[in-house]
Image 1: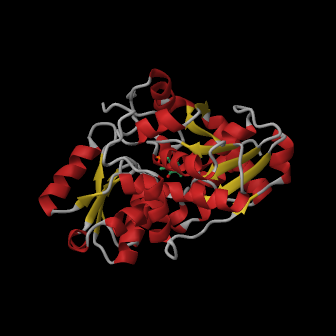
Image 2: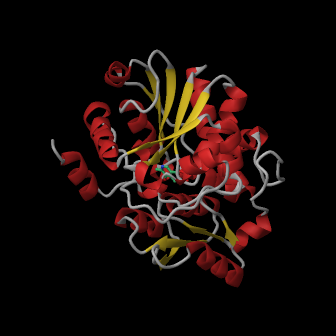
Image 3: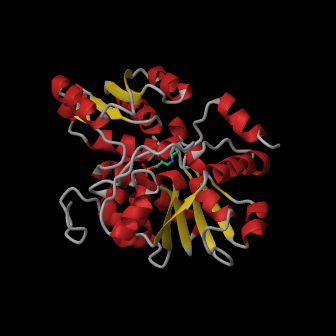
Amino acid sequence: MQDPTSPSPERPTFADVARAAERIAGAAHRTPVLTSRTADAITGARLFFKAENLQRGGAFKFRGAYNAISALPEAVRARGVIAFSSGNHAQAIALASRLLGVPATIVMPHDAPAVKVTATRGYGAEVVSYDRYTEDREALGREIAAARGLSLIPPYDHREVIAGQGTLALELIEETGSLDMLVACLGGGGQLAGCALAAAECAPDCRVVGVEPEAGNDGQQSFRAGRIVTIPVPRTIADGAQSTYLGQLTFPIIAERVDDIVTVTDAELVETMRFFAARMKLVVEPTGCLAAAAVLHGRLDVRGKRVGVVISGGNVDLATFARLVGEGA
Ligand SMILES: *Cc1c(COP(=O)(O)O)cnc(C)c1O
């Protein structure tokens, strides 16, 4: 593992986030920042929800995907891109590729939510399936990339992907002004690392916190151990945060710039989905609820603070949404 203190040439900086904001302007939505008196009353905080469930492709991943493909030299881009993903990154790459006129191949787990597979195909990408419990998607992705001359765009461990994700925090802070805390959802760390880079520059006093599913707390373990800890594929309804290790690029940024990593249970994610549906009229997928679940369920000391909360995505099968939101109603 690389020394977290020595900057690597691939490691993004705030300048990359600023450049990403220029590249995605006009292509990505500047998503709304929502507030809720009920959420404020529950927590005693002033909460600002960045609604990336309303982003193109239904998740913040469009930012990193569009930025990464845009950053490729013309001739490289024309040969096509390939991505491996449990869903939202795939959809984002497929959509961004279509908008930029680039052919896309997506390696997806066979048990990915049907809505995500269908959407990815709908954007015109070729989908290659694999078994997430027995096959190595990275190896498969690299094999196909090499054989077909495609550029592999990983879901989080990539300078331009991290920089693109950071633009959501840039927009949020531009809109809210100073924040005491920014709470992000954590899978492989692209969102958290990007947001941490943006916050360090635009709101230096803002604490930055990541939230993981309790069953998949590799990020929390890594943060505490000071090295990347790998775990088996976690079983959680947060399918966008089933990554088993932080990245070589995301980890050092998180180790350096993030203040804490906390976890929430699947039951808390479901309750938060219900809160968003009932109170804020929002469809949010389980993974998209991570940050809000930590805030609403007392995992963080937010009383009296101005807190940015990332709602990271809204891609959930309607049947699953209805079942989860209907539970105990
Ligand atoms: C990918 C994803 C995450 C996790 O993002 P990382 O950059 O992998 O940490 C969180 N929420 C949603 C909806 C996602 O699609």
